[in-house]
Amino acid sequence: MPIDYSVLALPKHTPRVLVKAAKDRKNRSAWRKTAKAVDKRDEAEDLEGRPVCFITGKYLLKVSSDEWRQRDRCHIESRSQSKARKNDVNNVLSCSRGVHRLIDASALLLLNKRGREAKSVKAIDHVAWNRRMVAKGDEPIRIRKGLAVRELPA
Image 1 (cartoon, rainbow, N blue to C red):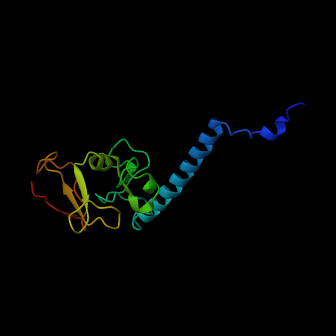
Image 2: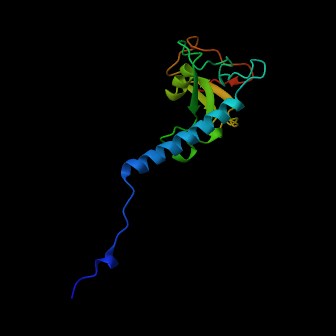
Image 3: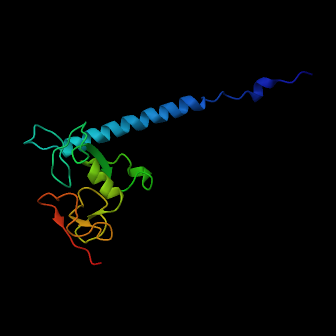
């Protein structure tokens, strides 16, 4: 009696390359939507709708050789630590590339009104320099008006 193999038929899987390409396409699309929303939120009316650095208040350029004018987007909670908030508009702010480096290096701290680390853009109330890294008087940038600078106890 012959064996009926049609009962054991397994569906073919989707190749890994196609699965990865679809996932990458979805991630890029989500990031483009987030970046567009962040730029719209952080643009200034008096500068013809150009994005402005959240920390310094200077207008930003898409392409610039000056790292303090180059537009970048900074995650408050890093993407590697908070994968769910990677494309959350409240977790991303517009800033210059130089400011982004200061925030990532923890030389510039973003704080809420209670003096703790801010979890969203709306909660940022103060900015503080990490005096272990940046000496008083050696700050590379000036903080914009309206954003309080707090001195932390050493």
